Image 1 (cartoon, rainbow, N blue to C red):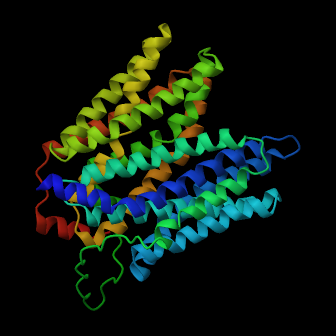
Image 2: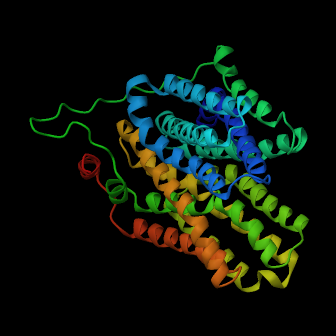
Amino acid sequence: MHLWRNAERSRAMLPIMASVCLACIGSAMLTTAVSFYLGKPGIAPEIVQIVLTAYPVGFLIGCLITRPLVARYGHERTFLLILATALLSAAGFVFTDFVPSWFCFRLLGGMSMASMFVICESWINLYAEQHNRGTMFSIYMLTTAIAVLLGQVLVALVGPQSSHLFSVAAATVLLAFVPKFAGLRWPALPSVTADPAPEAGAKVDRRLGPLALFRLAPVTVVAIFQGGITNMNVFVLTPIYGTQIGLSASATVWLVTTISIAGMVAQTPVGWLSDRLDRRLILLVQGLVSVTACAMIAWVGTLSVPLLFVLFFVYGATALTIYPVAMAFGASQLHSRHMVAASGTLLLLYSIGNVATPGVAAGLMAHIGPPAMFLLLGGGAVLVTLAACYNLLRRPVATPIAQAVEDQV
């Protein structure tokens, strides 16, 4: 019975997953295309830095604004509004090559992608059930990973220096509207109990902040922050690491590809396991294996190229699957009416880790050497391991206590 219901619910996810996939493909293409364009001679370094900073800043803004929009317009209409914003920002690159204006386009692009992720993740949390939430999150993560990969494939097919690259990226974002135009609708979400009327003098807007989330699910907060440190930055930092240890350009590219493939291959089995075992135990194992892989890469990874590839595969398969397990566990501790707020707060933590890591990692690698990259990434995995141990050892939060905690901060 569970298998049949899981299959039905997975098929029902197709409209939103298709839209998210197409929007992510366009975003990945734009990121690469903008980087190539900014690398041309004659563009001031200050302009390059400003434009590159716009996306993470927009991502932070998107995490903050999505909750009130969803509360006012609902998940589906807010998603379409944000998708239209993403299309406008993508189209801007087609109509002007005035680089300073690209700051606004990248800002809107980052804001749109963050909002899409908040909407999609909160929708999954509300729609999924305890026995299939991990599987659904793994499908979502697999969709975004495939989208990033397809975005790079399209860049290669169109040509990195092609004048049509921005047009193809914008057209891909436009295609994200197809599920809606085709009449495919998101499945109806269960009704959410409204917040009780506030007493006189009480605060009306109770935002579920990081402190309240940490009290409910410490391992989720820590693991999401670790995901921000790892999930995108490992792809940014690995080429630097490969160059510094003397790998050829082609070997370095394959090293990055190995991590990507490892994360994609592991998503579905890890999601399946997380629906059948205690997610805290899975996070503990993931943290321990990630720490071990980081330590081995730092100490013995340079002794053998085949060994280095094996260790990178192990690290990618464990570190890149922590995020969906942590989100599924956190959702199991929350009341449904707090799902959107929690998703926004967690993505905010994720984006903070994402923004802060590259500069710190580059500085450590410059002063200590290439293995410093995995001292930083391994440190994030250590935090996940400790938080999972704490979550396992402490008493479960009872429902009345959990409700009281949710209504704080």
